[in-house]
Amino acid sequence: MKKIFIMFSIACVWASAIAQPAVRIGNMEIIVRKQDQDTTMQVNVFDDPCPPCPPNGEIYVRPRERWIGHRHSSGFGGFGFALPDNSNSVDYYTILGGNSISLEGGWVNRLHLSRRLALVGTLQGSYYNFRLHDIIKDQSFIDEVLEGKDFSADKVEKQLYRTHNFAAAAGVRFYLAPPNNRYSNRGVFIEAGMQGDYALRRICRIHTESTKNKFFNNYAFSPFTVSAVARVGFRSFAIFARYRVTDAFNPNIFPKDLPPASFGVHFY
Image (cartoon, rainbow, N blue to C red):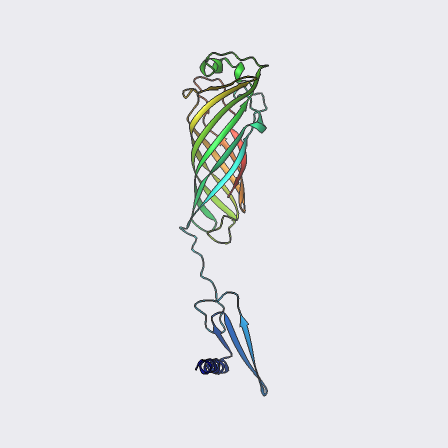
């Protein structure tokens, strides 16, 4: 009975193929050609079936992706470096550039207004470490933060200011080369926006040859900061530049502030 059913199916396909030059079944296509007194049959198997299969002679086209209103979220991580002010400015304390770093990680969400334009929102955690050079000589720092302690410069090994931050940002992203599909993070883009940071923990550390001193002063260190942020992205990473537009230290106490510019890399 099984053999009869198989033979009957083949006969039906053959008859249908003779009636129509090509028959499509799932991802298999049967083409029958009659040349003079000979009849040949060609079977093509495609990698992807095309449900629902199109009529004979038509090409299957995938439906166009709906970009407008599409949301996509993904995680990211990265690091950055603070740019020291080498102009001997009286506005900023001296920091050691290669040792003043940030570690960052969080979540980015984008809402597409079109295939090339998207609104971007970011939530992230950050760790900032500023390697300072001259705060033990600043009388304002000695009085307000260092509790009046006078540290000898030849015995001090490190002067640090560290914060642990929670940040939120919003911006606009324009794709020079959009990703292949709306779920992908790849593509070439430029992005600009604003970022607000809240420092959950603010600490000044003075390391000497024998001690590690920690100083907390929530009044001297600003808890909230606002920065302008720009990114240039390529495929799965982006180079960012950040410029803080508010003070990191209380301007009513300190005559100087931390250098505001930094740059780094984010990986998506």
